[in-house]
Image 1 (cartoon, helix red, strand yellow):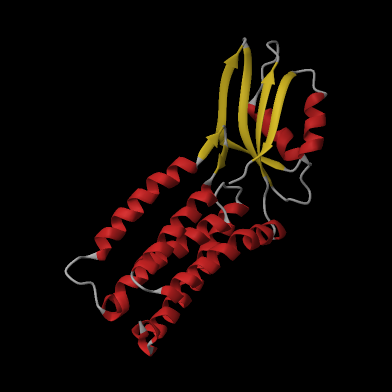
Image 2: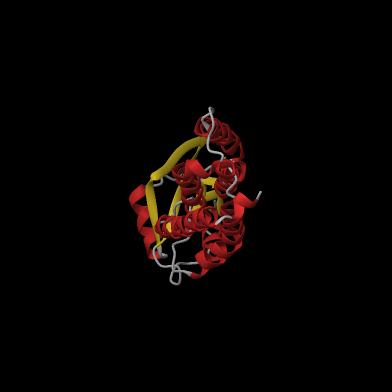
Length: 239
């Protein structure tokens, strides 16, 4: 067991650990850009996926140190890793749920995938690197949520409006009304259905500036007072 704490082995673990930190930071950077644009996947999701991908890639370069220096042997552990990643991918897909324009479970799926990477690192004997990855994943989940909330961003709302049969809604008018209240209507998210001879419009709006956009509560008050609207729903899109 002493070979697991040799100078070469510890250096390899430190090298992998630095890669994991760098991957987390770069993934967070990309995730922030996505969350700023109002997309479902944010800093936590991108950070976890980038870090787990790094973990599953970097250890391959240290094959002579696998299993405490015993090497890979006649078997190829990378084939096992491929099977693990594929299987975990199906599991992750099962925890992602889509309700209307709202997507939930992305971060949970990313964290499950990251856990599989921790297991792979443990399996080949990189205990310190696995510990670093586990700590980074555990700390990033709550800390990045707080950081993401403090950084400038654009809240995205899932809006569903049921109009009265006598009213004919127009996209240009809705877009202008949204912009007047500090939101940009995402036209590519628009879906139109009919229920009980009433047009139902569902779309997403993104706050152009978080500090100047009208709050969802005030939007609800305004929609409730409109004679052209039979019912509506407002929900913040989260991942």
